[in-house]
Image 1 (tube, rainbow, N blue to C red):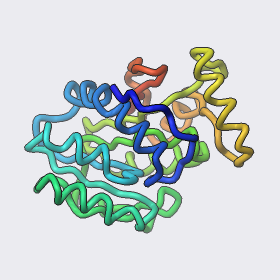
Image 2 (image 1 turned 60 degrees about the horizontal axis):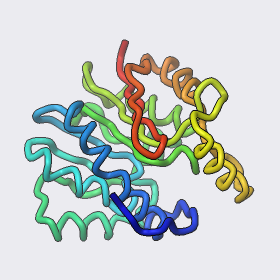
Image 3 (image 1 turned 60 degrees about the vertical axis):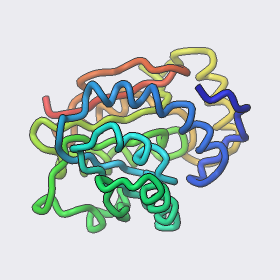
Length: 216
């Protein structure tokens, strides 16, 4: 567990807050991924940021090919450095994916994915990003593939814990449009529009969830 004090909330992918959060949640997420990832195949990470998660997970899945990606190409050097420092041959070069621009998405004819995962973006990203995630999943998931989304969420318009309500208050206090905890039900609606459904909601430490979506 990460015992360092929490830095100020900041969504910048290379900032101390994101590193702190990633080091705090990487082991609980890994434990779940060990249950849901294929024995071999392909995994796509969206919004990879610094590459902390993808390079931490990869050694535990030696026969899974990991594809990191991000909208912000300035993080690519960080991803490559972490990969190369660990000599990870199963982590591909990062690619740019803009979830609002289908032309930037990988070619489904070239590769389909067993798992698409994204960690901690919805508290500082617009709900409309969900449409991009599920539309991309509709095109790029294998028939039995799943999308795993980790983070804090509301459920049926309500906070699941007082601490999540307080955390949301901090985020909203920044006054940035579209920041704030999103509702699981809104993600379900978006998934349904792309032929996907919520298959499982897994409780995680620090009042977070992993939401697993796949074809019904």
